[in-house]
Image (tube, rainbow, N blue to C red):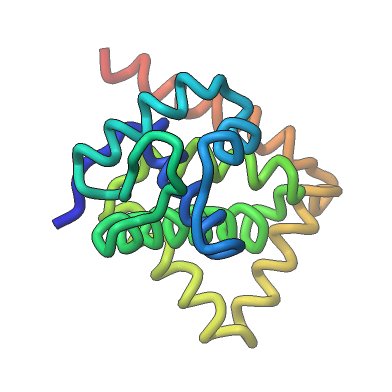
Length: 170
């Protein structure tokens, strides 16, 4: 059963997985450098992950994931990938910004919402003949507008309407 972790501990688990894939283990200094944090912060996080049974950790020894830790880290990576694909493929967000946004969203999204992201991505990939046309139209619209209207104008109109709806609900 997956243990609920803070966003910070999820980041540590993901970094340990990355190093484990690259060189079969991680060291405190590797993790500190990767996350740009102090070694003392890494040690505290690793102690927490170790107490949860997600990593094998002993001071001054290489760090590895337990089977449960590896499974949870893989799920974290999968969540990240799904969101990243949505941001890049559907919303056409530039790679660097998409990566940064996905890192933030992956910690907050709940399983039903993530499932809808997956469903939508699967839909556009399996219905590519129809999907590519409207998806390309949407991406063109976000960049240069359509029918004399820019995306910013439509956003402004939508926000005005949403504010009016909210005001009417009071």
